[in-house]
Amino acid sequence: MKLDTMTRIAEEQAIIGMPQGKSDLVDTTTFTPFFLIDGSCTALVLLDSSFEEKAHIFQERAEEGWTGNGLDWDSVAQVIIAEQLPHLAEELTFTSDADIFSVSGTRANLTMLGLALKITFDDDHILRDILFRAKLHDSGRSAITESLRSTPA
Image (cartoon, rainbow, N blue to C red; front, side, top):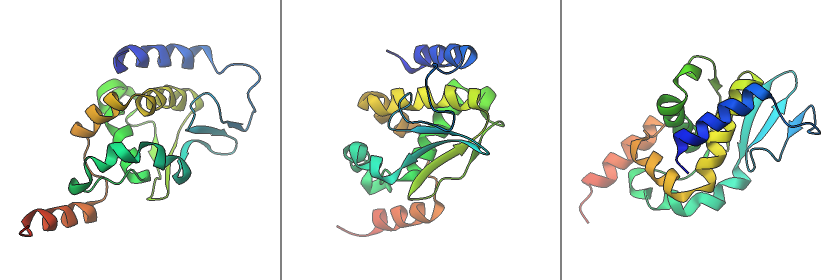
């Protein structure tokens, strides 16, 4: 199913609310492998232990600098927001680093993004498509990539 169709579903579910029976503090099932923390800070998180599952996709683009870490997932999320959820652009705060993908915001906004990210994580074709439009998050890696391109084989 196309991401834009699924994003509409995500938006509708965010309006309706989370399914009953979820922990008030951590939802580890709705967005698996991402999880939603809802406490003093509301955040959507992907830990480095989950990066390995999609490493083969990022490996296809390794010479460009992609590794599949938290910063790369941040870049994936930025494309989803820009293309599918532009109304969330100013509503979310990204605090990802190499070891963790993390974004904070309201539960409704994170639900929309979480469902779109889950769809992307679960479909290698969508992830590959998004990576072609994503920009590397860390400018230091971009310099390394440029250096690799200029090095004779």
